[in-house]
Image (cartoon, rainbow, N blue to C red):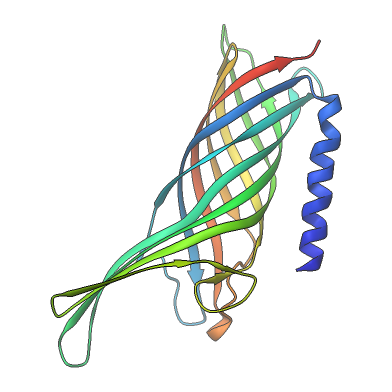
Length: 225
């Protein structure tokens, strides 16, 4: 964990150090659909995990490398997590309906390389690069219905260790995406593929990784000449 913190700080400093060289500064916000890839030695839990709606918002900078390529670091508040809804049949034949809506809040630092092309008055672009995230908050809303009675709970996420729900703070992975810029506005779609195992549950080789899709709009606030 200490090594991940050092990497997070190093990337944050790297992104910050890039700011004096940036030609463009802006803001970015949008809509997220997140889920998790969770599996153990017996099963991959794709069938019950659903997309969890959320958001991302933050600041961006852009360092021009040549006529086509640029480096684009950002600092974003991003939601991640999952939902599931399942019905279990017990040994006595009765059923339990379970729901879980888990939302995690991260500070994400994406470090993307962007290729921009000119097409008339528009500039389509593609981008890819690593990201590093640091979990700062979260909650899990759970609901169970059994024999006509519904039981609800709202539990804060335990970061690092502790009783369930518990996750590791550090997340990292890959961003890929595309979009189009029209004057000061930019519209984009991205996919984030988490590579870090964020669960503290090690039973049966359990692993959990973040996944997400984002739709965003950006606005260029300042352009240096």
